[in-house]
Length: 433
Ligand SMILES: Cc1cc2nc3c(=O)[nH]c(=O)nc-3n(C[C@H](O)[C@H](O)[C@H](O)COP(=O)(O)OP(=O)(O)OC[C@H]3O[C@@H](n4cnc5c(N)ncnc54)[C@H](O)[C@@H]3O)c2cc1C
Image (cartoon, rainbow, N blue to C red; front, side, top):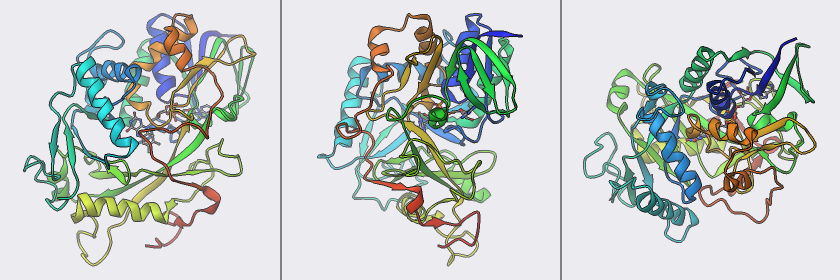
């Protein structure tokens, strides 16, 4: 019987980052995932994610500045220099500024102030009255004259699936063992039991199953599974050439879009300020399309409308089919992507009470991807008892206050139960729009 120093359950952002850091410190590590990495259940199973620095909380701002050094390829304290550089593009971000009275506006301004004064970053931010930023980005139309735009060149995107694979490959070179295609059913004492019947043993066990953590640990009330909506459009070769170097365009009350993927020429659009939950599990569990396709077909019609609104506002040439201009372009590969929310968006990285050796890392709240290079270092510190008290307190296993806390950077008036949604039947029938 092999006993590992640490068994990590879940090979998403927290799990892979942690496995790498532990292995760098010579721990004997096993990583288990229900799917092959990159897992379609991971919130990071995606073409790309934003790697931004903007936080008005100095703790997260410091972590983001630290992680950017690895994405950019400069730093080498936690990872080999350049390991993630090929999975990253420092493309910049155009943010549509919100009404000055909104908490989002205060968040954006507060973040810039923290970054400029405390970290000497984001000094080249520019304000513009339209999206081309005075002709710098001619790929956009000049029609959005009423929006105020902030261009921050100090921002990028990570190629999400590719970066998970890069971390797995690196972990393998460090001697980490992987057991994929086998979900964990329960964790008890030092034993992890899988669906296949196989059991594994760890002196310490770390559960990092994202939105699905609730299936293994008593997290009810501490995290909610929130489903976010994603759709894509297929570009032609010409469209790809025109748009390949655009920055991210981000509107916190509508949605955001990314530079297109270089291999597939697919451009991703996400909605904001709307999300889903499962009312049967009282918001606690995700319903994964890949496991229960009949229960979560596609995304809501209103999310499709929103995606087309985002395109219409920022890239109107992509609204209609490139060949038949009277036909709307298909929104393809629509999906609900599940995150594990805490009420104040702080992560949970702690020992599970009443256990000797089981730890949990979850509560990503939709902003953990950027920390793939460095979050594992802090998880390692937690299990070694050396995590700074301020971080240990922030990320403690705690009750959430869902009524009393507002997340300034996420405005969410439209949470809908999956059971009430009218679906855009993209994958299972004729599209309704
Ligand atoms: C639409 C969308 C956009 C986002 N955009 C950004 C962004 O721009 N920037 C950013 O920083 N973050 C972003 N995020 C958030 C980011 O993707 C998540 O914070 C991050 O992926 C969470 O990591 P995790 O390790 O907690 O969980 P996940 O990445 O979800 O990984 C969980 C893993 O656990 C495995 N698992 C689940 N159950 C079991 C089981 N029973 N047994 C074994 N394995 C199991 C899964 O297969 C998966 O691999 C976004 C998320 C979404 C959904």
